[in-house]
Length: 500
Ligand code: IDC
Image 1 (tube, rainbow, N blue to C red):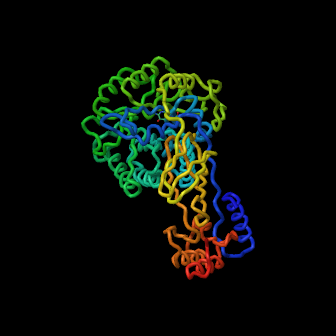
Image 2: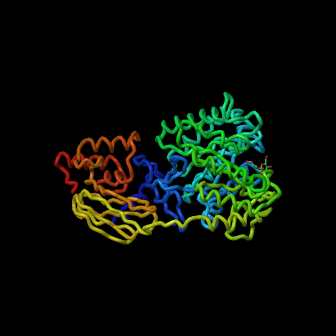
Image 3: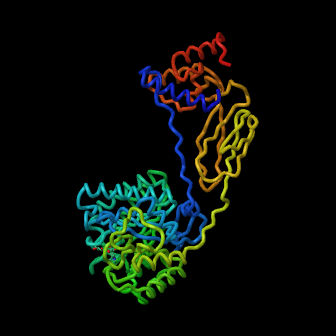
């Protein structure tokens, strides 16, 4: 029986065993999940986890990298969180050339995070949708603690710390996540320095994040720190940065309100501190009125020349100038092209398309290589390669995707054939093949009472066996792992039964 048929038979038997309450079997074999092929640019695979180097954000190769993207409006407002769907983010990535999405979660206004636990739960579910979809698409994602009414970030410092700790625990291993810890501190008494100042808030929250990261994988995400006067006072940070060097400082502008004077500040400060324009608008600071194309273009020219990233406000269809979409647009499934865009949306889309650098993904096909412990024939994507015992193999010309790699023993039936599921995504993959002897459940190359012990524990429900181990344990080939197999293996050890 070939392996596929064997597996199918085993599955059928497993189902029968479960439904028939035979009791000897644990879980049925898990299905291989198919991988949807991607056509667009997977920014995160190409550029990896970003970090701050000196006063610039750089990619995994140490090359300056500009975040370029769109911000949601408040994810709890109206239907504005809908835009975090896979389909809409894909349009932003492929048609708008955005490499980043910013998820704005208000802390106070309109179902704000701190105004009720139900809201907080809903907000986190929306964040999860956005982060997961961004990850699938290879886009960077900023989780934005969107203070505004709060004025002083210290107002909700306790909640902020708990929130970011939770985010780190969830997303620490994700290479695409950045944290923005206070959107726009504001109020005449809210300054960078001082005991109740922004710096002290940032120091505390950054500490919480770093401690949580250390407790997980130790990987470190970029943290975006807001600055005074609605994130305009970057000059206060110069000479007084946080000790943590993987932080950038936020500068926000609205093109019709903030002009040369603020651009000059950016030019001056950018030589000494890392800056990110984590929010900007094409209009008045109110978000409504004053659409200003020429000032917007001047800003983007300046920021491009300084290699500073920028994120536009906002992906809403609200009746206000800053909105990218016309009122009534289905945000869950936005379309490519200009059809549903406002003048602001049209400008941003066309500027981004012009400004995004070409991304090259080379090569476009990949290989799976590895070794094998015994002589095998290995098949993936209808390509077959052989490997000698202890030798290597290489299957080339594979596109991105998840492959079933089937390994047939050429060393006789004493070895149990095996299938692996392997994902190839923008790089070569390795797979060292290991076939087990029939009955050798722990794969140590011997058939012993230890293997019997494992099967026994499995039958009694104390230990799990993986799908391959179950095949190895099923020495009588009846599709079940049962005491009958133990009997046969026992006989083999005592020399009364031949397993092969
Ligand atoms: C605005 C929204 C508007 C909403 C208001 C709430 O566009 O629909 O009613 O917030 O107070 C910012 C803020 C951002 C503002 C935006 C425009 O970060 O939350 O959004 N803006 O006023 N800073 C400068 C401008």
